Image (cartoon, rainbow, N blue to C red; front, top):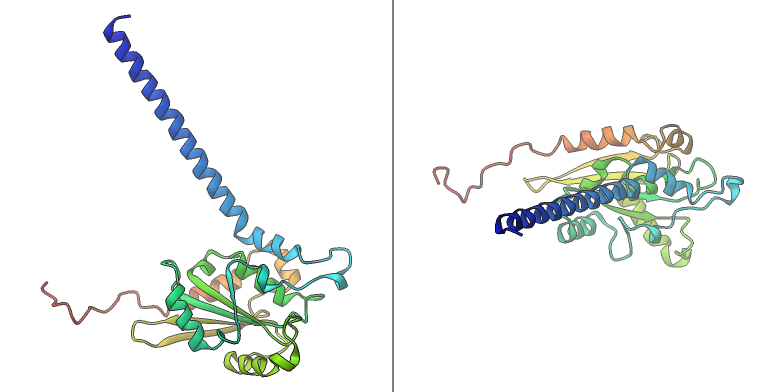
Length: 236
């Protein structure tokens, strides 16, 4: 075989290897994107919530245990106040997280409207991508089987007071955004106002437009342009 032919053969082999490698990388990236889509989003939130239901007998449906959530930090006796939460946020936030979502639930409605369970599923599986911009914390109060009343009743009272929880409209949801001036913007809502009832949740196939709109409104309070650093001369 001539040297020229050998060079062409070598070049062809290199091109073939590049094509195969490129296809493999593209395929892996596509698989990863599809996997994330399955793990997060409206469908994932709906399926996660339904996995705790008894579809034949609603009375046997179960609450969503916070210990089974990977993207929610559970409130404890050492981590529960707004001060605690904001300090933990500053220490553990990811580059994408710009604020905090805290929700309190009782799960009394787990065999009915499932307002608390839907709230948990939407936060855990990010029913809207905007949830991903927040670090999520949650407290299960009053009806938590792992919290004996004699040990946790005072804690329940303190947490209820801290986040202004009201029994009836489902989980209390609070957004806190640290601003550049050191102030904290706070927005409050409830599971009912955010459309987290079971029937509405199913009707929209896991989509949560009211949550999306509420978070968008909260984010408008962030400054669009950061003020100049006074330590740096303007002419520098």
